[in-house]
Image (cartoon, rainbow, N blue to C red; front, top):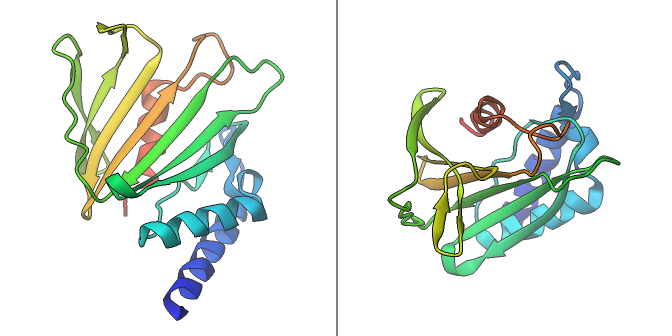
Length: 181
């Protein structure tokens, strides 16, 4: 019980500290992103999973928390964000942190690139499966890495590269670097 209260308190301190950050480079601070209800939902998911979720300190401009889901079979949690703008065209971010190795097998047509996140390597893939055919140019970016006994997957799903909510590969890597410790 005390351990869970401590976890909730630590998460609240982190979110409050992040809210104090300034807003340079068009990024929203965590204070703009997480509401009290969001923090409660995240805390419950953490309690179910038994570990603390690593969350980014800042998100790209106008991205907001949408949901958090605990997947007991994969011993993981997925946090979903969406681009909240009047011109919404479907841009979304998904962050999964799990204890079980997802054993990802990329399609043989997929172009898998090693990218450096801080001081560790991650796998970057662009594309998606369309009725059994891998589409390398699909507007979906996948970034996967392992750190401190956890497996992370950060996915950006977009529609229009001209959208203000579009996230580039470089921006996705910078977002992932916030999750390193």
